[in-house]
Amino acid sequence: MADGTGTPTGRVGSCHNYSKPFLHGGVFCFIHVRSCLSFCLFNCHNFLYPLTKPTNIALLVNSHSGKNKAVTIAQSVEKFLLQKQIHAITFIDTWPDQLDSFSDIWIFGGDGTLNYFVNHYPDCTVPLSIFPAGTGNDFAFILYGKMNALQQAEFILNATVKKVDAGSCNGLLFMNGVGLGFDGEVLKEMRQIRKIGGGLGYLLAVVKQVFFFKEMIFSSQGNYNYKTQKLLLFMVNNSSRTGGGFYVSPLSTIDDGLLDVVTSKPLSILKRLLHLSKIKTGKHLKLSFIEHHSVKNITVTTNRKCFGQLDGELIEGDQFEFTVLKDKFLFRY
Ligand SMILES: [Mg+2]
View 1 (cartoon, rainbow, N blue to C red):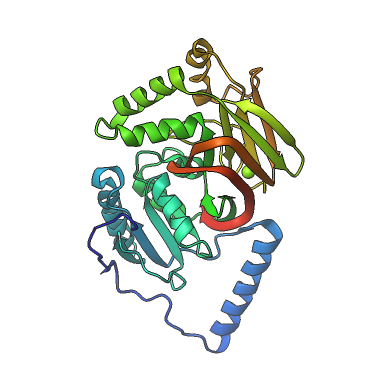
View 2 (tube, rainbow, N blue to C red):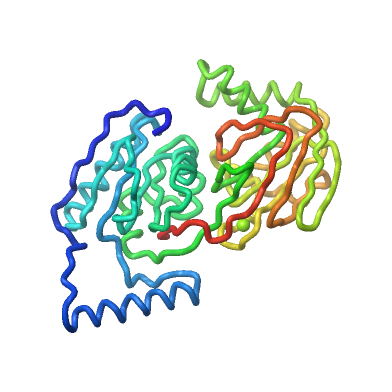
């Protein structure tokens, strides 16, 4: 991990090597036909029927996620796979450079860990899964709902592989979304008062910005819109849920080849207090000060330095170029 100090491990979960070649005679023909069929199904229907199953899994763990929760969850999943005689190797914090030899990659952490993964392995074509073990687990929730780790592991073993979009902002990939303006200032504030941490730290950061955040002017140019206006929020979303349970973009889907832009016009302090909490429920798109539209790409410029959050990571700048990366990754769900 970039910020990780954990010790690398490479524990082998089981010794069954399912990748050993035994390709001869009729067996080869059978496998060849099966591979062709899989390829056709994949390309025709945007998913792969469960003809291929996870056989050789890399468990990538971020030990800093959720106060060591990720390690505990990964250990229980590794044990589960061992009982099923499925080959798995666990990597804690130090992840391999090459992942092509694995049939599947199971990531243990939160949205930040997934963001780290997609930005460090942007060309990965191995099917992925994400186990929720961080403070924000929005993407895992979209894929798996409220399953516990072992239910999820069992589910994934029989799940299909599907193509999933990602978003790109100034070359950085995101899976959930980017929030510019109010969102970014809240995150910056949280970093400054990180000693307080947790729910109280977040609450203080939000309250301060509710009272003191000054809207900025956003100009946007995309495949079908061009506007210059003062805004409280400018959010670009790949998925519907972000920020640890906020449905900021309830109409977003992760496989439609589109990013959803949700903006809020300036609000008085009273209206901020009244309405910002509605965003959590996803019932805000019809409010008069909210605008929503879908784009494939959009460039946003601001009249002063703007902070933002990208899958919960702090970014800053005065120009942000967004593009959807259609079918960028494979997930088994
Ligand atoms: Mg979409």
